[in-house]
Image 1 (cartoon, rainbow, N blue to C red):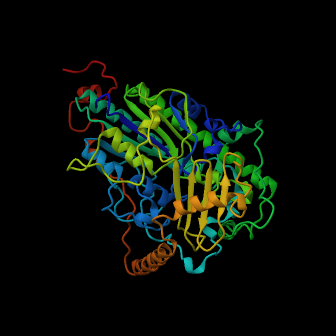
Image 2 (image 1 turned 90 degrees about the horizontal axis):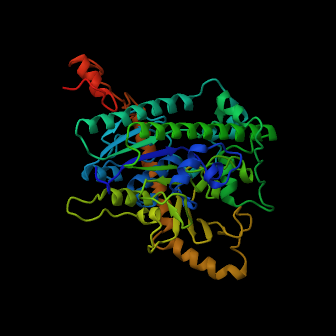
Image 3 (image 1 turned 45 degrees about the vertical axis):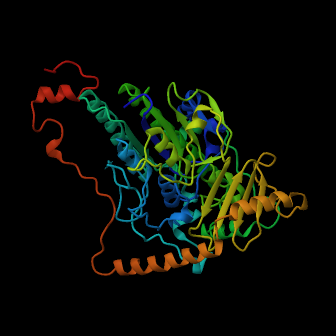
Length: 512
């Protein structure tokens, strides 16, 4: 590792909205570790996901391509093994690449450039979650707000089980990196630690629920007056809001539990940073914290993700690199997760074997990390081609304006500077016709919604055939199976004292 090629600790939450964290002004949040990371590095105030759903967002982020360009349409879309990711290029540049936790890869390839994977995923790797646009909008019990009624406290949850396993293995891996360095292996590394909280269901333990006993948690904003856009109505049907109305008590419990889950992620982040320091690697490591998408959490009467409103599409993004990123910066330019591909390749000086730089739909964030002048696009594109809608959706944020295009429906245009709550659609106002036309041209350039719709429908039809076939006879599971060779663990093959000495970080005697 050289001073200019850092290690990378890439930490992800799942379904964490920027607006529910301390660095982004949420006074009800208890996120001191995120606050610390923000104070020691840079906060991207306007970072967006490129699709407000797990599989598509992560495939776009890892490949550096927008979802319509790579067919990553929904939570049942295969991520092809032939699509290079930033991990492939970092490996070519000499990095060790390791994943602990969720990345929600669909298909037989469960590594996508990671040399090692320490845990299985929390969700299936199969095509089974393929939607059917021919039936939309349709109630989906699998994404129903019915479970919001059960928000609150439990002694143990699936999410806690998973995150504790991910966390423990990630800490062990940090010290394994340190041990290898002590033995002379100075290769830089990228460790992705990807938790599942605060993804729904919104249930936390008493330890975190009780942190908010005396905290005033704001209620959600109601929907604006008038008829909701068709996009909102489709998603509310998909989430079964018409079947399971939520009381004020349900909503309050969900928001309190969500904050508890966010607080637990914050504690895990702080513990990771602590062990990074204890292993002696903090100064040479670029730390990035973000999420794959956000969560509506009752705002405008909507829940979960899938929508382009700010709570769903804008994500936290904090970066720290000691002596390389000026501390306490707040970056106001618009960016998106698709920029991470170019960023990691830039940081690692990674490129094709022939020396050319990998193509992507994003730009390197490295100049923005450092506050350097750069010709920046100041825009973000997000697409939604998944369940619940039945038509292509695309969002463009450029400067202060956000345009949401839903094929076959009226446009939505918002001035985020004057109207951060997106309460006033400007698209039909004559004085904004020029802005609407310019943004519409920008959004539709190179993007053909009718052709994309046909491609999505064809993909769904083909995948339904594969799903039906695989359900016959013996199905092959693609889910990742972490394997451990116990014969190589602890004291098995070598001198006990020498093995124990070499495992210490730092070394304390016992070496010959």
